[in-house]
Length: 346
Image (tube, rainbow, N blue to C red; front, top):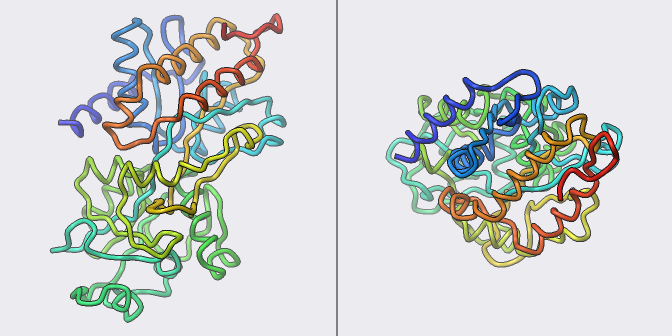
């Protein structure tokens, strides 16, 4: 039911997206596919409560950054956080909305979710083409007693500029020297091997139709599509499942007060059962708004979501931000001003 609702909402929202700043009574945003399920749920509830519509186009973080820089949307969305100097260089401010987990998903006939264990270095070796088959001795060593299939591995990655890719490749860079020096971390990289899918939904679709494949998606997409996922080794050496609680464990030590411009990565965090590929997703807006009322409307939406949207976030296995972090974000909105130089959020 959730999958059908999400697809219908997404189609309806995308159909209504404007390529220029939206008209009165609506807002436009574009960017990350990672948070699209929860933004769609929030948009539906917000319109029912206020009559104001959000048209959100999930085109990938790279596209969202480009569109907000070009002022063709009211806000951009990115899972790749921009450092404070990059925000300032483009006249932008940034704030987080929710936290989620990125999950390796596979198409392995006969395997249930969590039946396969992977380490970070093994994942890096798969994605650089060094591990080519599922019954490779390295994988067998991590999965004693599991009959691994004699199947070639088909790697699936994002084809678009993606904050999910930034987080995934940043994690691989932390885990494997070969990856860090040969490929690196960015929202778009020169992939050594594999097929490209557009958006989290494109990667999920490729994996579902390709036996022997592996991809990486935000957990909501894995859950909605009933996909087989791997257990990942955490920083303590334990193999753990992708769950909302384990995403919360990774976010527990987040030091938002020490993060200039809210730039913060939550990868490979210490602590018990901390999912290693966890990240926040972010909103980008112009610090100087040409239309104060429009800027205020966007901030009213996210203020409403902070107050009323935690249930929807929980339902989709995102982690809502703590109340004190939400208050910190609201204070930061004083930097967003209208043509008269006064804050648009009051």
